Length: 390
Image (tube, rainbow, N blue to C red):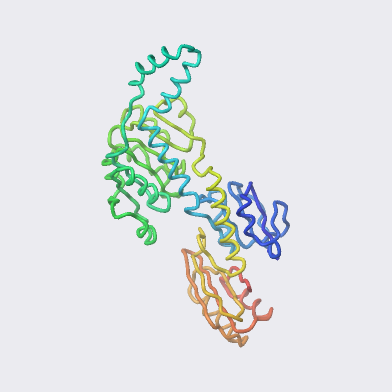
């Protein structure tokens, strides 16, 4: 029986994916095989020797020591795209709030709570409504930085609204390119996108390479009065540079999901309390996806949507025993393991291996179940990190 330790409040729909006859699930589990969590920070916590995998019910993994876990053979999963629709809809809300006088209009209407004369109120509102006039999104240009699961959905939404869409993503994957509408015009660099966009929406991960991607230098290229939207990660934007650009009139508005000190005093900033993925549907989707990925890894050794190991799956051979192992990505490791299996007279029926940066992962189906001595010999191969028998 596999043991799954939960952190945070995980959607019941996700937890129900773990069959009771094969899984023990709870927040107080000893010697867990896997964790499933949301925002709980694992940095600095003791790592159980039993831990095989961690699944983050969400896209960001800043709360997990990913490189350390990789070196221990612990596969870290996330759930890209599971919350994409929730974020996409909030981006639309952000664009509408910045385009029209919705928030100040609501505040003004609420300020009239003491009025009791309906005719007088209607007349006053008719007189004052021009103060809250805005513009339409149709016909405007939206620049999207990052064209992954969320960025491509935002692009489709904007096209449906009659907007012109520009895209910039130097790391665009083949799968993402297939998803992307051919109506999206790809830009070769960020300055060009900024110069041509009325709205700019950010959808890149928080990496060292993307830290303060939007900084003072980048904002010199922005179209005057442009609206910047950040529903990705706070570190992508330099808040001091944004404040300076707003005060200088270079930016028209900044709409984000990450309030910072000083934002509340700036009327051109609309800051929401990190609610991009906070919908019931999103939390359910993330939990289900995280659970399914853990189940497939624990039971079959398959890896999908890992942030530290390569994606790898292989159809199971009927009647065979599956061996998986993780190793440092150096030459000769697989060959050495195959030699161990040959010496143990274990016939390899099928195998697959793949690498990602400094780590590699392998799946082998063998005709007969290996004995403990053979598995210990594989564990003793230099650069092998972790071995499992399924």
